[in-house]
Image 1 (spheres, rainbow, N blue to C red):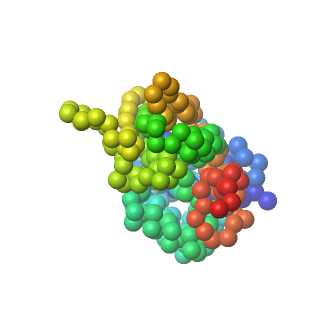
Image 2: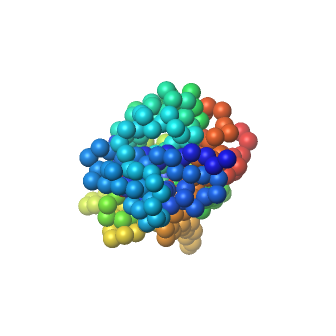
Image 3: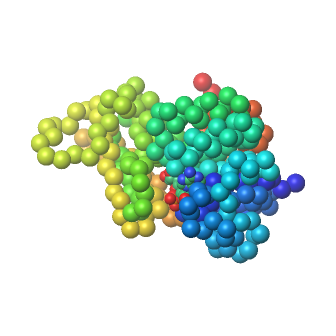
Length: 271
Ligand code: NAD
């Protein structure tokens, strides 16, 4: 039977791609499309909004009421909204997939709380390519060690509101974990003026915001006489949408807990 998927943030850039991904999937059906009450598209058909044709599902704002008729919720909104939705899903016993980035420590605590009651998948990037790139980055950092300087460069469209991207920060965490460093202490965000020579422990972040770039990330390992770069370029948001839907269908069979895309793709190494 087709699984009843709800989407919060359904009128947004990712939300519309998610609606399309759900409509294209043989085992999923769109059961609710939700957004904030002041969104100008409330009341419109969510399929028409997403360019998928009429679906008979109206963009609505009452998340609480809609959860009753769902098997799983996919949330790509904003941190405060995600925290609220996580609480509602925990109350309703509904698995949740979160794509929202820019969550602070209290936001992540809210996801951890919800994960004691329901399965919660949280990934800064739902593409299979980035999930694999994270694995390659961990291997590269371990193999190259402290002799190579690590810099992370990311580029996104002009509408993105958080920086560096959640994916870039995750890449930084993976490098830090692999090299026994602490990202909170060792990260350097952009450089300007008299910076002094580079401290070898630092992990540098450079951010570009321009035009309609969907999402590009490079982790550079620069040594003396050579440089290795691991780059991922997303050319369509559908890669994130299909990955998030895959996570949602996977979450239906899981016990309560906090999972990421490596769990979904079965890439987790033991230990
Ligand atoms: P967007 O601004 O186009 O869409 C966000 C939508 O959420 C809007 O329609 C907005 O009205 C809605 N929203 C905001 N507050 C709400 C609330 N309180 N209740 C209901 N709806 C609310 O943004 P976007 O580009 O679609 O990105 C959304 C989030 O997803 C961002 O945090 C972005 O960084 C993240 N993102 C994650 C991935 C991933 O793979 N994890 C990929 C792309 C984007």
